Image (cartoon, rainbow, N blue to C red; front, side, top):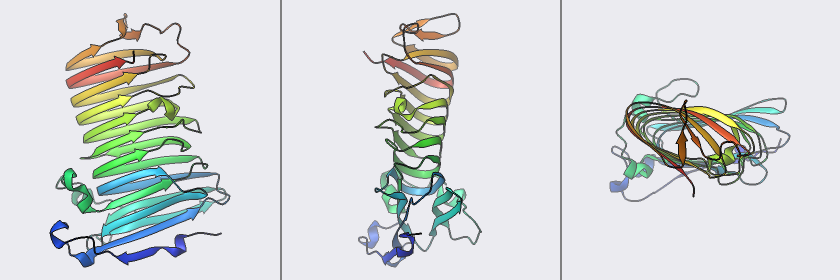
Length: 302
């Protein structure tokens, strides 16, 4: 099997003055590494990305690659995680970083990596991970992020399932192009986080589940809808913004405690709210929306 994994590039990086480095780090601590593997005859992949602190980028890989990744990390505290196992035409891949605590396997030390001590304004000082995903191989994708700033650009990637878990993070998720595969479920669990998701209609999910703890959550369901879907959105303390395209039929079953609620473009029904085009829409989205404290704003594109 041809692979560029054997050609992993390591270099001690002099990445600026010592004042620009994290506390306790020296210029000699910083390493960069790149790794990639060609798709070959792989027909499906289960891919896990686990990242504690810094900048995370996920985007389409180079043509022909099953995945590619570039790590920048403080070698005095962390080490890269990259594992590949193949069974027939299916592959299991794990990519990320872990603390140097002597534990076996892929492990994120959340007390170390996601303690909340990372200033997201200076997230790049904690390192970075850039991951590319195949545009041709169907991917079951799980991403776990701690105290990080994440940019997840999944447009055009055949994602069959997506689980996204975030801690004290700032996350931007987008599907700028339609999903070439049918997605069974999209699940997001956000902690003390800012989460913005765009063009979710292009994701092609059948089910969606979003759980938000403390923070601001914005979900834009624009895109090319190809089927009906249903799901639930549960938020705690913070704001929730929902945006829907005008040609999508939407039904909201709302339950709130002390959350304010506005729903422009909807009409009230016995069970909740529906868009005025519910009966004529080609595709429908049914959502159960639960909120405790904060605000819920719902918009339909003009």
